Image (cartoon, rainbow, N blue to C red; front, side, top):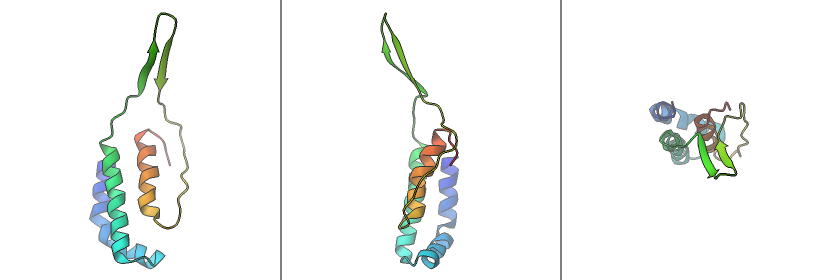
Length: 101
């Protein structure tokens, strides 16, 4: 899903860059860079591998297992200066681990 999202962002990057220029007044080059970084972050996390559970300690006395489970709905606070790029970091990690943003 994250790879498909990255591809979709790249397809509309030029159009969305123009909107960022109008909305934020940032230079067109900065807007294009921000969208490129956003799609890059999505692409990076699409290839991320993690174990859902990991045995931390296994002895005769105790067994410690770390389990990673989704939290559910999570919120991310973003500064105004690069909202699209920073959204990538919040959104990709959250979705990868099964949360809703």
